[in-house]
Length: 500
Image (tube, rainbow, N blue to C red; front, side):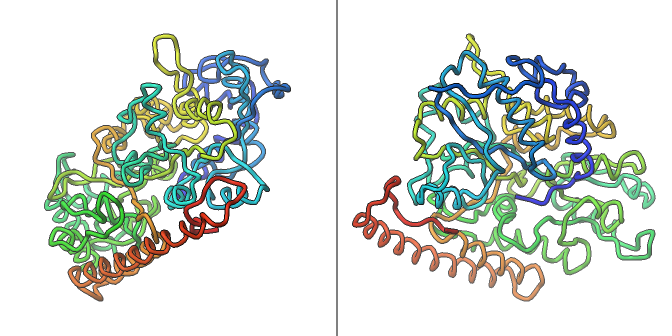
């Protein structure tokens, strides 16, 4: 979903992993995590370096892995992942008769659906983000997960509340988080020391934050303007809902069919940031380079930049992490939307469900607990933040082992939005979500640049989005009626998904 930071560190991690494949993952990475290749996190099964091949008579299930943390998806990455799957799933007696195959990089569900319809390709389990859930649901390819979770006594509360909301559509769950992608603030303590300013208490609020950020403005060491903070908006729609939530507003209704952001609370939310942008207290971009170049002192960053912070800030600067300030209606922070989806057209749902559970939870033991094998492996090889609330401590231990400058840092603030349930992701309207996103992004940009007031911009935004959604609903109903007259080789379709 985002261009990831920490590329140099992740490239080095994967290079190390590529040199030693015993146990299916890099021995150096595992050693740093207190594991031994071939056992524990690396799993058991086939001999080191030997890749078993599927035998005749097994049900083959294909899946797309989460490659969000990797520099590029290549043969080395896929080999490491397939080795781990072979040693932990394919040769595990608990899954006799099922063979899981790593298939291609993540994303592009619309393209996969088109291949399914055409009969030119097929994937049982997708790892995806963005607008794929509405597209897959409307075309009949998104498998609802609520009943499947219930039959195996798997509660949704094992994942963050905001992420479960993002992976649902009108109250039905269609995906499980593949990683959480939270957000918090990284800041330069040494610059505050130079300015004689205090470090914020983690309980700081939006008023004290605005005052402190204004006090940080001035000239940096190169003579350029130094702002107080970046606001991580980028003039688009994807960051809108979490921001509105902080002021007690909401982007859309629960059915995800109507825009609802045109309220006094919504206007206050956008006015808060707009004035800081116009005054030069805030800047509207992102990246760890904003701190190293002293373009700002506080930076709202996605979790993809955690290891990047260790690499670029290291021990050269005095720095740490903070939670977002508490906004007027309470804490709120961004979290991502990436998820695993089960293809409703899978040729063998029971086998695909077993692989799906393993990708999200690992193998279940006799006492009902799970070993989290694959989720832990994703943390090890990609250093991404976990999808499961239970794995935040494991993530912290892992990244601190791989990136020593993170030792002693307040890493708990990356976990806080997930654990306490105040991480809110991008949401999608049921029908013309692409058009709605464009409309919202355009008007947010107009508001943040001071071209229109928040009240005017939000009123126009809501009116136009609702008109677009109403048209989309009518089109979807017409497509559904027409579709009944033209059966296809695939599942029943309610309408061609956007992007095909």
